[in-house]
Length: 160
Length: 160
DNA sequence: GAAGGTAATAGTAATCATTTTCAATTACAT
DNA sequence: ATGTAATTGAAAATGATTACTATTACCTTC
Ligand SMILES: [Mn+2]
Ligand SMILES: [Mn+2]
Ligand SMILES: [Zn+2]
Ligand SMILES: [Zn+2]
View 1 (cartoon, rainbow over the protein chains, first blue to last red):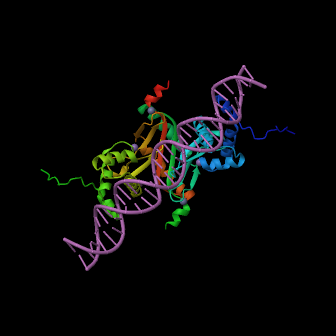
View 2 (tube, each protein chain N blue to C red):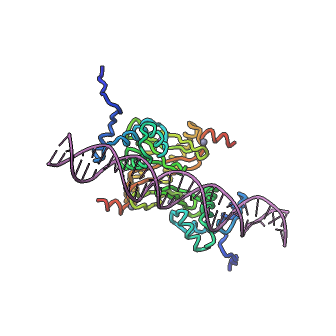
């Protein structure tokens, strides 16, 4: 019978990331990562704050913003703008079970659909583009953002 | 010798668009379009306001915002978010001499590079994706947004 | 061409996501 | 256990965008 390590909050692998960067692995940071890890949605800073607040009411909104910025810089979290005036966050693909995907955004109801059907082909093209642009513009690509805007099934039929 | 039509402000073709929609082609709208037409940059609402203000000081910032929203809805203008907290605008590709292009964004200095080297290939892939996603998710794609983040030549060498 | 009705406008105030400030607390190497 | 720099939370500031309201421009009808 495997001995279960006694731990109040699960010690995910990313604790090591923090140490590597010389950052402290504090309770707010743990909780915020936990919340991100447990959600499949595209949470805003305030969404995250509210969930965090349930687990640990002492944590302030400012800390959520600060931590998210840190996590984005560390590459653990991706930040998106879906056009509704607030930033959205999700755990980065490499981070976990989450696979690399892109987004469909309904401009009517705001629904976000993750898709990764074509991500492989997209990534191939991107890799090619990346090389050429690096040569032509001496531009060092670190990241990309691909999203499609339109109408989801419900909104599409509704408009007819 | 071609007779030059006497006109104070050039009557661009988009005047027709307005009438088609049942909108008035007012002076603020003309000036704002003119400013967009004459600029190759990616202007924020305030950038536009300042330029407009030089030509026609009576026009207010609110009108700039309202007009931009209208123009975006009409499809004459494209709105972008390059991550610096303010929206950026440019005349839509179909509109004019402007060709369809995508953007490279330097995350260090904020420089924006237009490129259209691969846009053709990208658009082919997009068209394909579009069809499949429309089938699979019943999602009606109207628009897309592709941008690359990284370091421009200057910032790239600076960091070494 | 004048009156009436509606769309559009300018200036102001309000909103709201995000940052900044700063004193108090905490993690953690010693 | 202690010292110290990193981190935090509350409050205030910021800054882009939007809402409100009175005024104006434009178009239609007489
Ligand atoms: Mn997603
Ligand atoms: Mn451009
Ligand atoms: Zn929808
Ligand atoms: Zn740069």
